[in-house]
Amino acid sequence: MSCKPSNNANLADFAQTQKPNVRWQVRPSPLVNEPEHQVNKRYFFHVLGDHRTHEDKTGTVLSGVQAANLRAVVMATELAKDPECRGFMVYVVDEDGHEVVRRSVVTS
Image 1 (cartoon, rainbow, N blue to C red):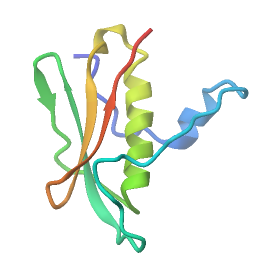
Image 2 (spheres, rainbow, N blue to C red):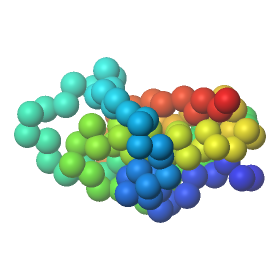
Image 3 (cartoon, helix red, strand yellow):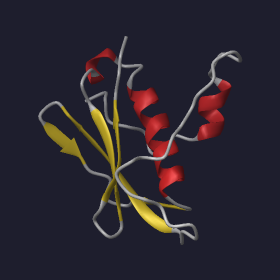
Image 4 (tube, rainbow, N blue to C red):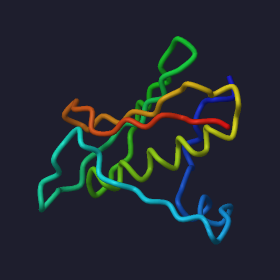
């Protein structure tokens, strides 16, 4: 299936492919209130679509919910390039099992 996210999605590669006049605004997810002094945690980035879930079994250690939200936005944007991913969703679960971010994959 071509809609499986790549594990090497990173902000530098994403930024280089964007037009200079496009501005992205990323807001913290309202699902969880992030503490002021967040300790690094492992976040799992799952993709839901095509009547199944592609689970991230290894996760990524990040500085907090805002960093996880930004990575989810990048993943959803990457997936949106493939029309077969219409209606998919990226959702993020922290190491404690709490869903902290949910982003829709919107294709044009």
